[in-house]
Image (tube, rainbow, N blue to C red):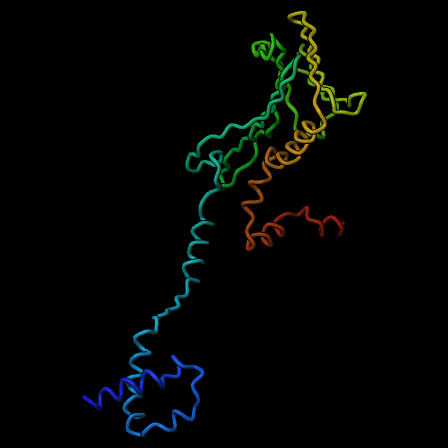
Length: 251
């Protein structure tokens, strides 16, 4: 018993991990018997408190996931894949004399025999003007629509639809506080000549221009083309296209 008590006390005092400031001379002053018998106790105690760590390589799983993702069709219902939930967005501006609503319309795609897709109809931005019918009330039954592709078709947009002529003009206000939208509609069949006027502040106009510039590539369907580009297909596509830059310069 006396020998075991001596071992336990010497272990707690001379453990270098528990007493980092303890001098090395005290270790050499211990008896050889207690030092040799204390060594397995120190190792076993260290192993009890040592945490198990493991490192696993997930590189193969990552590349497998990438390959599965590339094989999937584009995430768009127009490509014939799984039906995605439809999302409708728009932006409205309400004024005293009229209201303006801006809505983007997605392009349409047609599948080809090769399995690819082609844009059959480009998208557009639909502008709807509704005259006021009272205080904070608008007559949407008399609304007038006009389609534009983007901000580059402003400040003047002329739309001829048979005997219906629509002219949209966007001009700055005299005081420089914003712009005004003026939609003129002439319908010879109904003998109608209507003008809808709505002022737009500078901040509201900046929001519209930013939205137009952002949505134009999506209206043209270029986002679908960009998502379909693969690094291993670029050289093959460029070689198959005779109208590349090198071909034009060599003519």
